[in-house]
Length: 306
Image (cartoon, rainbow, N blue to C red; front, side, top):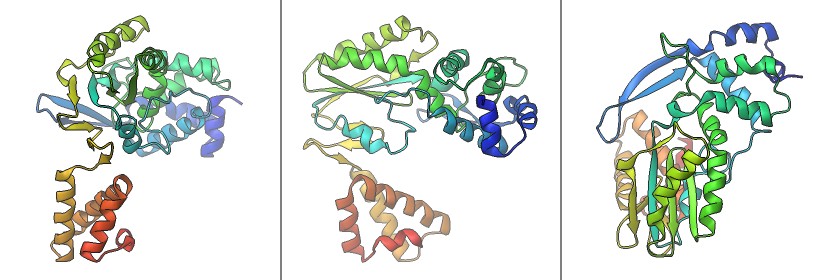
């Protein structure tokens, strides 16, 4: 049974219907722009329609059984969170953060297709066009497939695509006593050896070129070295000098303020839902902080069921 035939079986849709619909998938996207966090320019978001999203999710659920994802890739993996990513670096003194520029649009769909065809035994040559059409979009007026920010399949595609890079780089770094993780386009390196991280940016660029990732480029503006003398942040979390992963003082202050307002009836329904998300995040990252909040404000875990 081919990959597309498996997709047909899982979705209870006739094979010919999926094949026909797949041809239109690349243009079934809502495209809009949002300002980048640094205030420099805009990021293009392309969200597929609900039926396309459903096909993408089912297709990824099939591919996950076959396609290699490196253990250094911390994003979008079941059971792995930003806490796990930060924890890999909490015991080290020196930190380096790097970033890939325009990551998702820079991924080569043809290479991804080659990975699928080589690693997935149920993928057949006749599946290729349908796979590309379901997983990628075509900008208006273009015949070129691209991987989009906003598609549920893109995170998995990115992890599969970067496997060789992750594997080569991690092996080179482990011999140098350097820990490495990648959370989508955010690369984090840490070590206990003073000065060991200064050679890493050049090494990253070399591995990209030598491994054939010629479209992936480092965002030089986001290369940051840090140490215990300064605040160290990894995927939004704080690494403390005593080897813990923390929410950080500002985030804790925000949560306390929102809980106070909630208890005094000052939050709207959407704000309450947002607070529940923040509280759940806090409970996962720093359980002891959540316990202190429960004691101070007289709330319990039933708060999440409100």
